[in-house]
Length: 437
Picture 1 (tube, rainbow, N blue to C red):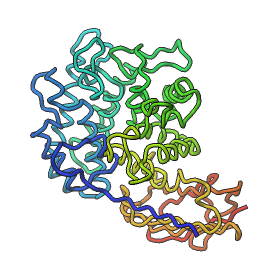
Picture 2 (picture 1 turned 90 degrees about the vertical axis):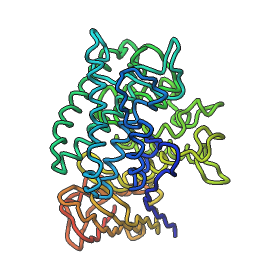
Picture 3 (picture 1 turned 120 degrees about the vertical axis):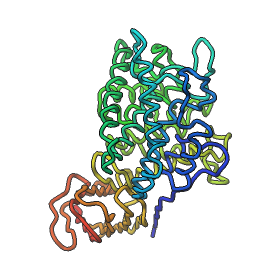
Picture 4 (picture 1 turned 135 degrees about the horizontal axis):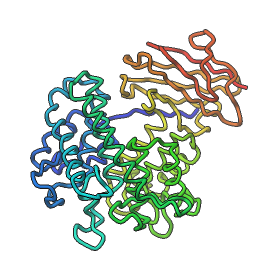
């Protein structure tokens, strides 16, 4: 009998260097990790407090760091339900939000700025500060992540009743509108698919590596555009069809060179595909990465096959992808097992999730497959704060099987949509039985 067990465990980065917030965001953040973030706000300018706009960006790390840190702190508060932690660090959190707002004001002051309202700053370590094509400027990725952090923190503070929450949400919506306006001004619609720029300073400059690794797919991940927006569909087509000739495997793992693909940086593309219901495409990327970019001797991830092992970003990316297969909070609901392979539901298989943290509290789940008897049994311990939040349990069945009817605790349940069972108002423990045809 196959047995799969998934437990999500949060760990901080070891003390020493300032944390890589883009990486730690994949983990969620535990108490020590988030406290470390706040300790670094003054010491290493993770929350940038440069009094002079245009200070040397190497001294300020990357312009997206504020967004990553704010998002990770909001996730920590949601996963732990430690609202006192927010009160403890509220001023530093608001300082980080104010930095984003202030930098936006700088770009709004410049006349005829096609990127008005966006953040100017250092992009990634791969580009020099001073060159004909500089790594300082306006970049789609940086604004998508900065918006994600600002909006996420505003939403959390508003839910907690903090006076600063609603103003931050209003500011975030203005920011989102400015990002979309800049993207629309600079998109080249003469091409098929459209070329939505990753580098807003040079919108016609194409760089396959940076487009794949830190490009406009993050407009969906960051919540700037809905995942089913036409512009996101153009980005997906550009990456998969235009650049990689329809090969998801090449998009993930590359060809002759590892940098021909995005490796674990393809997580953002993979998860957008999963959220769009393209589960098989998500799994093709996921299993390609397991085969091509994890050491088969040490079972640790690397950044580009042979280097940087272990690598905190790719470790976090793997955890994020695996967790999203099993559990995800999005669109006002809690999604369970949305990305599992169909073979995980074959005869006799058992899938177990034990006390996994969610925004609503700890969740436990056991699913047992008895295809021969034409049924699947699931036992769910619902999170204590689930309230009216709908829970969507997806059973991706093998061999063309489908759900005929469902019982919950022995009572008929009408909430079935395709292979998903929708549970509303559920509390405590429940036995879910799906009868198959």
